[in-house]
Image 1: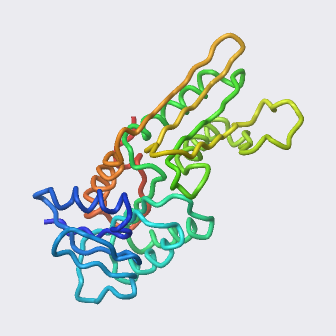
Image 2 (image 1 turned 60 degrees about the vertical axis):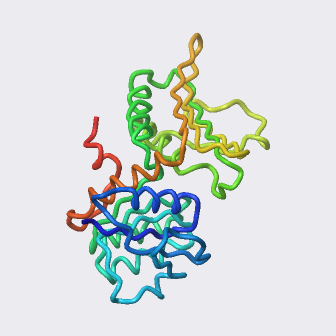
Length: 255
């Protein structure tokens, strides 16, 4: 039986992930890590930091739904204990992303800005649309999230922009703020807009606007469970993998 630890277990996504693990018969919840040490499923130990986790605690994989500031310490912990880790936290800075790659030389590391299978497909569709439509369409991305999300734009929005930009060999500039600009939009820019409000789980739109037609790709997450489900699938996938860095493309096998 697969034993999974949850980093950030007392947060919204951590709670959902822990519950879904507990409901399955092919895995169990090993322990949790969270500085707030709030409620966790009955009988599950929660440590306030990775430093508090004793050597006697064992798990097969760690799923991380925490804060970007907590990820570096988690990666160091995973490397020191030789534990595969699924990093679902967004808003990682360049140094932490570098540490992700470095950690992957010792343990298996899975990282995605969005754990939804639907978003994985949308990324492929956006890249395909960019290739087919050419540079005659303006491209805009709009992302909407709940009012508690602290990073903007979302990691998913950047991931979608990167998929498009890769098709065109990095020619696009990303524009996040136009309020101080008094000039025409350039041909090779992707505007990325963020909305924060209410309890929006996560909406993403990619807009291709041409002279006489507009094409829109839209994904709306109806429940946070979709992200927890993807994280759990990634944990199962990662459990028997060798060291290296893995993404949703590896999980879904491409399209």
